[in-house]
Length: 200
Length: 400
Image 1 (cartoon, rainbow over the protein chains, first blue to last red):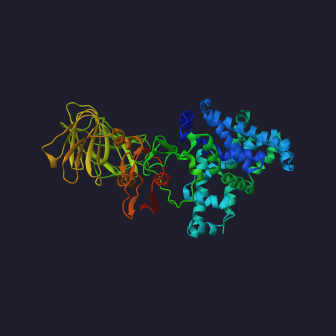
Image 2: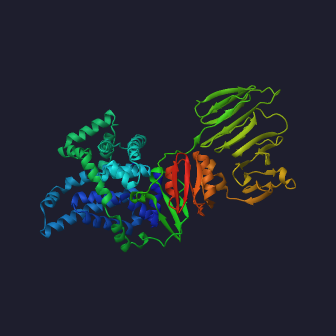
């Protein structure tokens, strides 16, 4: 991802090659959710996607010395996920229990893979921007946007005063905007629109 | 793989499109891509539809990390959790990017990476205040009592003091002696408040770095047989060599350090237990009126400390990295107790610290960049058993 500083990647890959647990987990945390989402768009089955992704990680961890850089590793993970997703769809077909959408997905797969990748990476940008917010803003944004909670419900859940929630919400948007501009990442008119739905 | 390289540019452009920050050339490239296929237009439509984006984010959060990591652990033993690490022992990566908050827990021969586990943190009630880290800045008091705030000035000559130009350039102050008239000695005082640090080059070429909440008083020209300055707080010196004029540092009236040409750090904060001088290179001598029989001469790596309680001087060997961390832009919490850590935070973030239910008995390890916002730092410290709450500029330490 574009937010990752090169020296961090350089350190990470060395530790990864050495099989340091810290590095395995860092790689896992970085790629887990985007890989699942990527796979899920093809196989349209959450559990199956999770199984495929865990197998991709296992393969990558078994040949950890083979990756000279994080981009190589990323490439391996995505290629493995794509191939496994393809095989999964073929197997489904062979067993004859193909429902309509799967069949359609299989036909369209070649062109869909690239779209799935682009979509995944843009979603990952948005996701990581939310995760980078200060904790309380992040919690409010998560509950508001992801869980669709109202300000009142968030106040109850986080044990915050109602007005504080509204303030945090506004702050969350402002911070997102600043962080995004500063890092030349993306800003979220989307998120802002969603937050503004939450006026009461 | 083509899938990745071929699309990295378009992903970046979509990002900028969402941000509304495309320039003309980028806009053209994106338009070309959009016009190339109906599918492309549909994709961008999906990525700008709030409902669909929210649904995608829900999916991101919904994947069962626990189940997946268990499956991996079955095959990859190195991935499995280490023996329970002793709490209170944490270690920071030296280089810190706040976006990729990397924290190492050190324990039982195994490492535990909390780095990007941010993604699955529980909803913790956390610091609402956005307290930024300290930065460069100081107040210069001229000999006539005028005060100059060095936060806000552009580079250039900011004052003339008895024939000496006072020049600010790139966040540090220096003195250009243009044949000073030695008839009267003028003193300047540089003071850093909490949350500020600053660097000054004295008229003899000696460099001084002031930590937060510190001060140094010095003449605008060193005349006479010695170079004498007064300090409070914490100052690191690199003294210009002059064998005929010893350099004397009067540390908060508690100790005097005598130098010929050398680098050393003096910590004379009122709320620390000692006034301590630590030598990096060269030789220094410390004396204290409260312990006149001793005048220890230090070698590199040694520290002489005058106890504030009984005035006695003690000589110790110390970890230079730890002493010099502040000057290198780091906090070093190696072996520090919580009160020690909190005193540093008070000065750097301009906050006050209050302990609720007593003072937790813990020791920290590791170092971290000082350019971290307070809430982010607390997020890390919270991984010990200690809790924190911020109310205005007061940090409340909770003893769990």
